[in-house]
Length: 230
Image (tube, rainbow, N blue to C red; front, top):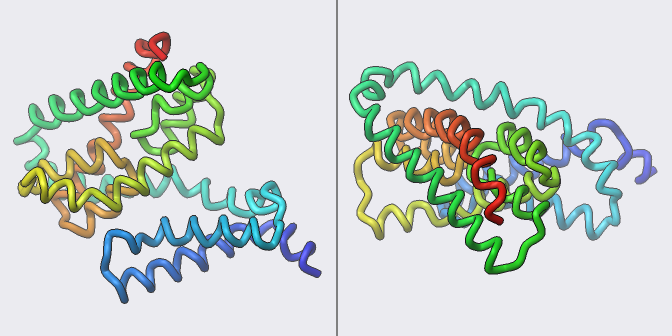
């Protein structure tokens, strides 16, 4: 009976949604950066798969339905972006400079760490697009020779770790302007961070959503240029 349940086409999707809902409920009860719905859902899902010895392919067969929503959910970020169009026009120079600096910093950091840790070319190429949203990262990373699993893992860990520490980092660096907050969040922790930015305010969310697009375009251009440095 259990095997029939696990091999269901919707088991992975239902399990993921239930755990994410539980994480959201916990977040409302305990508003802390560590109580992140996606982080909680990931931990509970991994624990369930390991403890019940569920075949990973059986889980992903259902969970893959959720990945289809990545692109349309990213497009939905255009709504707050449109509402803040005048603000975006006013700060276009800051947007271009900050996002460009962030993308170059990410590319250089990954290349340097790859050399220091003696990573294989496949792992290096998989980590190159870690700071952009999954939909873009998979396209860029696989074309460079990266591994899909490592690419997705790199993006997820970057997002989860970033959203846990982002408020503390912004406070330590005394970043208070909503435009600066949105640009920093979107440039470093992509879609996961943008969901958090929307909680901070519509301006932060709009800027973070725009940064996802701009950073994605810049990463597509920069990644091949840095591909031989790892």
